[in-house]
Image (cartoon, rainbow, N blue to C red):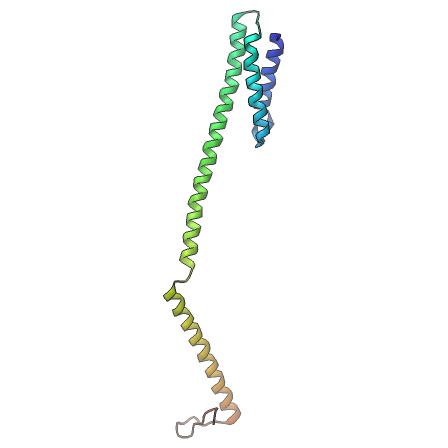
Length: 150
């Protein structure tokens, strides 16, 4: 392969890695294609002659800088993903704990149910007594009191 074509491929790889697609993509196919291109360019170095050793070294160093950047970014993204996973797991634990704490315990639930039931029953009883007093004119003294069931 001509060294100018190889330099052009390296520049294309650099544009691919440092372009907007690199910054925004999450597509696995994009990364497979990019790493395949790195492998292809690396293999072509063996067959390509440069005019000078220095030019070949410069091209190789440029390729290695791109690869190092890709690896560093991959590692950074992996650490970010792990950090989000740990944070998510911690939040999940907190949410489950809050949900369990909010769930009435057996004794607490039963006590609450008895209080609510007792309150409702007391209100109902007061309402019945009030209606009967108004309707039947029951006396307020114990000797004169009648029940609603008499």
